[in-house]
Length: 373
Ligand code: SF4
Image (cartoon, protein in one colour):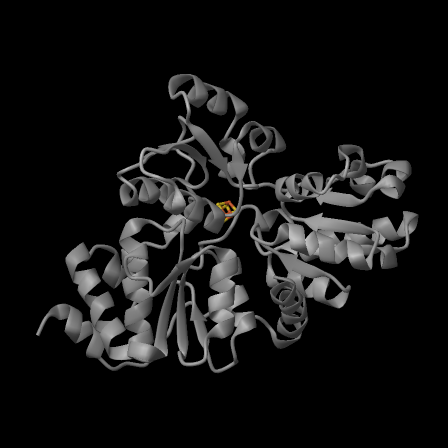
C-alpha cells in the first residue's frame, strides 16, 4: 500500500498538518488527489478558475470564469463538498449559492484578490452616507463586481442592488438604469468605465470615488451630474497592459488581432480589436480559423494554455512583463492534496462559510444577477 493511500485512509480527529504535504514528491501528491477523487466520486466537485496553473486545473471537474463557476455552484444538486481552486470571493460565492449541507473548501485561505480588497464594507457604507448628503440614495443603485467580499454583495442586496461579472456587466447596467438614475459601481473602475462608455455614457458623468478622500475627492456638482460613480479599484494583473504593447505587437506582427479583458484600462480597450470576459476570450480563440494571430491581454496562465491548445494559431501574451494572478497561484498541488486528504478523512480544513444574515442578502443580489443573465 502506498504512503499516499495510508494517509488518505487514516482516521483521526485532528487535521493533517500542511507541513506533511509541503515537501512530498509531486507524483505522491497527485496520487492522493486521484485516490480521494475516486473515493468521493459524485459527492465531491472540484471547480477550477481559468487563471489556475496547469498542474491544478488538470484535476478540476469543471472549469470556468467567475460567472460560469457561480452558475455551476448554483446548479449543483448532488455533491456535498466543493473544493474551489480559485480565490476567496469565488469560494464565498459558491457557499452563498449552495445549500447549507454543502461545504466549500478553499485549499489556501491566503488566495485572495487584490481588487476585491480595494473595497470594504465600512468604506462603502461611508461613501453611501456621504453621497446621501448631496443626492437621494434612493436614486442610486449599488452594483458590485463579483470580485468583492460577501458583505458587499449583501450591501447591494439590502439596497436594491445587484452583482455583475465581466460577462454580464452591460445587461446588469441596463437593468440598473431601468430602476434608478445612477449607479455606484465597485470595486473595479475599469470594468465600470468600459461598460458604461459602451452604453454611450460620457466620461464627465463618471466621477471616480476615492474612499480615502472626503466626498470621494469630488465636488457636489460632479456627484449631482453623475450617472455612474466609479470606485477607485483595479486589477493589478490587467492594469499592467499598456497601449505601447498594442502598438509594438501590431508593428511586429502585421494582421495580428488584439483581444483584451475589460478589466484593462479604457485606453487599452480602445486600442484593442476586441474586448470581453474570460469566456468570451476563450470562445473567440476556439472559434477562430487556423492561422489566426492573437495578442491577448489577460492572465498569463490562461494565455499560455490557449497557445498550447491551439497550435494551429499564433497566440501571444500582450505584455513583455509577467502578468499572472499571484494570489490564484497560491493554490498549488500540495495545498490541493492537503485539503482533499483532510476532507476525505473527515477533518476538513479551510471551509469558507458566510454568516447566515450576510448570506441571505448576498443571495438576493446574486439571484438578481442570475435572473438578468
Ligand atoms: S486576476 Fe485580478 S481581479 Fe482576478 S483574481 Fe487575480 S487580482 Fe483578482
